[in-house]
Length: 504
Image (tube, rainbow, N blue to C red; front, side):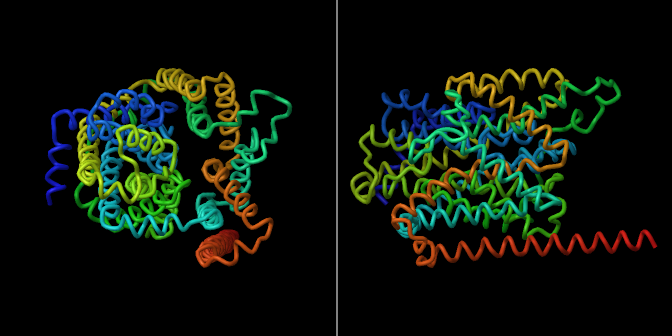
């Protein structure tokens, strides 16, 4: 009890609250602008934290991390362009809701379920940090490969009407992420002799190209019709989701919170994997799966709950083992160590008050994020009142700056343009681009963990069949593919029967 009182005294000072609020605001801004991710914001915030006390400094970093994770949904919902890779799955139903005139409901739902997922994962972390950290650390390369393969099997549920087109799209995503130097052997792959292509295609650059460039092409190609101004999108009203809507989906939120926390606790995974797994889970267990991709609110609730639950999950190996799950938490780890907090079992004994102060800082950060985004909804929806041609020019400028700022490389701008034009063509021939995203997100982890496992086993494939965890994930992946194949076969037969009846 003494430690908790000390933690409250550390975390509830005006300096701490202001630092956390500043971090949440900066994270929201950076997360909502494509290209300016919260990782960049964290890198900028780290030097500022040097002169602060421990809890305000870590609160600043965690506020930036949490605000950025939540802010990615803003551009994903309003423009169909994910601000962060973790918000890529939110685009699938969030932007269709905007086109249906429900932008503010989607934004309000996203931030409320984000806070729910984050707080829920924090509670799980506090009560089970020892157990979960031991389970997470037991995941070797073979187990992570099997988990990611299971995640990749969800491509079957995101491929639309044609499984073949979905698989083609997924393979394209895997091919894009193999461009550049081999991370293990240093061999150039698919560079065609170009020095610029040795650096590979950045995931965020590819996401900007896939979503932003088609939007820009469509917007600039539209004819300006005064009568079309009076559309649902232009007349959108600032609204919040009803309590009944949230209560109806509370069980989905709890399930997706567990998914996000579990994925976040495993180093090397991250919010993007969690959001796609949660989206596929929601679609499979929905009473109306056919409405997904057309503006189903469950398609916003699932990924936004899961990717914010990752924030609590990543703190489990970070605090208990000193293992960061992604670049963002690596910066948080640097902030902890700079202020004398060395992660590990001794941290909870030697610096208990500071650790509990960090827990309270996470709660305060979500309170700040909730308040800022709910107040900001009235401002955000006015973006939709801007004429689409003008908005397209603004998006083009922001995306170009964002793509360049990631690695300060003009090549990323060209890559964004080429991938965007290719995405526009793929959409025109009805090849879904969502599996491309999944291939790009999961591809590097899938390859690296497979090759690492094979090196550890000296080339023997037995490593994938001697672990019960691996076999469970392989079995789940097989069931997903089997059920999707049977579902597609059933739909095909039904369509043939309907065609036969109409001909008769």
